[in-house]
Length: 115
Image (cartoon, rainbow, N blue to C red; front, side, top):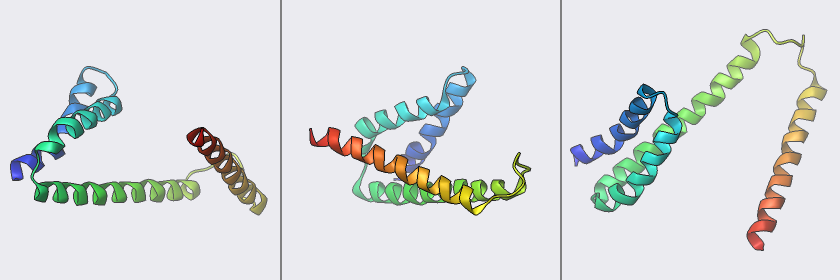
């Protein structure tokens, strides 16, 4: 079980390093590695190993997502921006634009899915 977990965890990292060594896209290499592992690796794992990997990947993804948002929040106030202050209208306008763009995206995707 430990060898299976080590292989499933280290395989994307090694694939990324090889792609970067050849000056190719590491993200595309990890994506292709994930597709191959889901087709050939996942059916050959034990049930207990699948549960351990699923919870581990979920925890790592949650932590990485939180780090991205923390860094974005810190970056907003720690770097000098071309504007002097953040006004309430700017924040409100940004939030309205994001929500409108999301609404348009969901409406188009829902329409295409229903057709």
